[in-house]
Image (cartoon, rainbow, N blue to C red; front, top):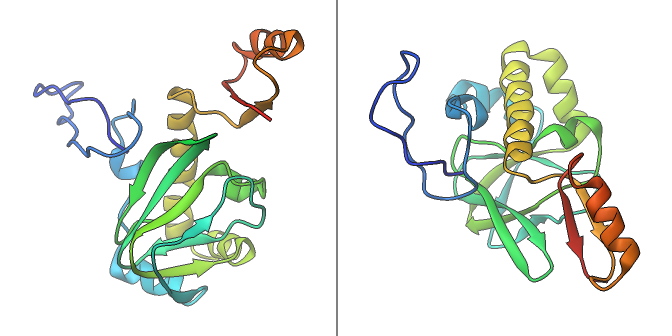
Amino acid sequence: MCFEEPNNKEENGKAPMSNNPRGLPLTRAHIEQIFPKLTAEQISRMQERGHVRTVKLEVLVEQGDSNIPFFVVMSGEIEILRPSGAIETLITVHGPSQFTGEVNMLSGRRALFRARVTKSGNVIEMDRQSMMALLQSDSEIGDILLRAFILRRVELQAAGVGDVVLIGSFNSARTFQIRVSHAQRAPIQLHRP
């Protein structure tokens, strides 16, 4: 994800954030907690729970998929996109030592986003059950993943990217009524059938 141009002044005694030019704007100053880089030791412990997979230019997760796998990027890049009809909004790009996922991975809900490999490489792939077992058995990694998942969801909500999708006609009075009545409670994305 990218975020607004940092001002070069310290705010609240904290150094300004660095700039990453790809993805949605971030509102939080804790970029290192939202998209942490895992250490070689942490990655090694994660590899014990998953399997290494070579990925090429391919879609790993499609929006709406259930049983979403968890990926740790060892080499290459995975971009996270929000498809809306023919338009894709870039959410973020995960590089080496980073991982995919957000709160839906914990709850077992369907994928909100598309995960697509943009640079071939190797990933550690874990199913949800293995990832959940890791969270419960390794407190260091569990803390990192849980914090990142929660902060990512907060950032998505702040950017107006919700998980409510309304499918209906732009010309329908009922579709308009639903959009207006729910607009302040949750961001709604409208798709034409």
